Image 1 (cartoon, rainbow, N blue to C red):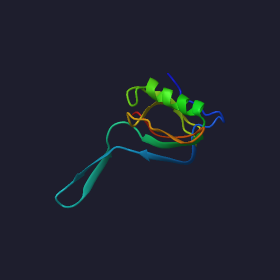
Image 2 (image 1 turned 30 degrees about the vertical axis):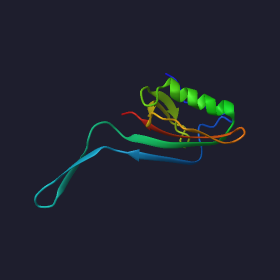
Image 3 (image 1 turned 45 degrees about the vertical axis):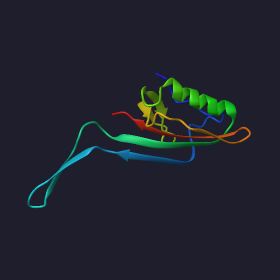
Image 4 (image 1 turned 90 degrees about the vertical axis):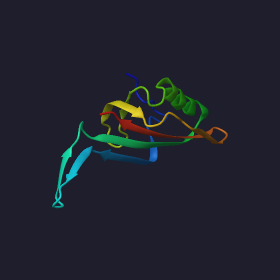
Length: 118
């Protein structure tokens, strides 16, 4: 399985980096106003907003080609959590589009949403 590429500096992401952990929960509210909640399927899901700024053309192309090779959301890949170093073997992109913005000469920006697959 392919692994999300590192930048020339060895970084996987840049700051600010946002991540969130979610659990699927179901709830039933009874007539008396009380609730019963339970975990519904799978474990936790982790999401990252990976922002890459000041990339040179080669780095921007590498990230874009990785995205295209995985057909956006279609295929999974391995992603190392930049905050904890934990390896997540089943991740995918949350969108089928990858926008690469040129901010200037040899200055590109990419913003990707990545999530674990339960």
